[in-house]
Length: 483
Image 1 (spheres, rainbow, N blue to C red):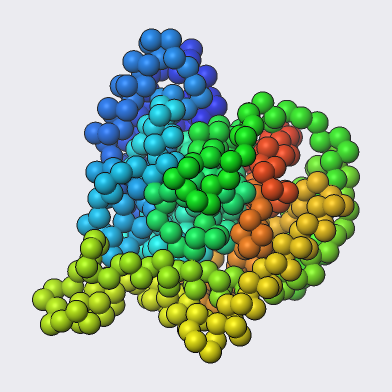
Image 2: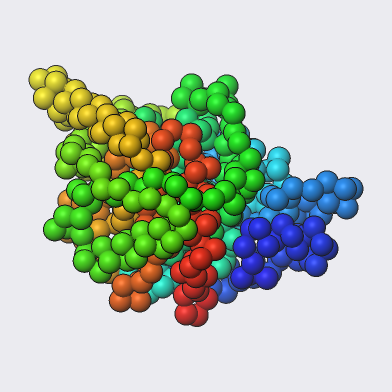
């Protein structure tokens, strides 16, 4: 049963081939057996899962149906879950039990999804490797000596290792798409505002967006259907109708205009990944797509702009963790200043401290105009590049990452080297566009992803292209040895 996709689980439950309770017990046993190798979970919620599975079976027995009714999933550990630890991968929130459910959690629970647990992540979603978690690094099931990507590496590793069919994740600068590429999954970052951020602990509020991680585009369509929609509790949520994503998967790609930016094929890209990207282009041409070279001239400025804006927002968002109201508090503080300093110094890890300091500096008097304001102007130029490109093409295609997954610890002493791995993904977050990564081959036994970008609210177009590609290739069906 662990090899079934979400779509296959929905069909199996509808045909009474197995119950949600049976499936849940099977997967919980598999997690207990295999996750010690991966460290992909922070918390398991066995009692809740079995309770939800029994309720889903009862709903089906009463004639209800639905693609997510009885389907097992997990949540990245920054989605608040009522009465369950929501740690954000940090010592700061190790003892925090959320008093309410995030909108995404509530929506999926209402659809009948079964929550198996909370997945490991880079602390406060800051990282590209899932090595900054207070609970230890997550391992890549394709090679346990390599990183699974971050910050949603726990969700990615768990799904790739067939511990569960799909999981929620978040993407601030590529944190859904990059781990999807590193672990041979399909990962979708929706348009900013498509999925509610209410109850999703913030890293950088103007960039964060929740989305699905699964093995196929078909499964991403099912999970996104349950997550998307307007939320009046979230001021950044956009009141835009949510289409039937599954119904749009089978559209023809005949005449689809695909743009390939020349800037993507620079010296920093592994030539073997470049070859796999071009092979995927040829596959889409066979399906009727038309390929055109385009230009995104301001892409080169995206990384420095992102690493000013994101830390600036992080320094503001994380100021609430001060040892006073909730979260970690130092022992026996001498006074209020000592309480603040030691609670934050002991509660936050090195990467989080680094980004808070960078952000506070960029926002400080005398530097705001030189750094933060200039970064926001670059952000507008990046968006303008995309708007111009989408006047010529329907979709943009390129590599998800410049390199395959690196070895654990390989970039720990050089944070900038890890930041540069986000070069192809962060532009979508700066512009607020939807982006998808899909499996496209292997380099040295490690998975490689191809990224698709589309205009605002065109997630259905991304899923359609990825699904048609997956009907004609088998990269997404490959399973890591031992799992």
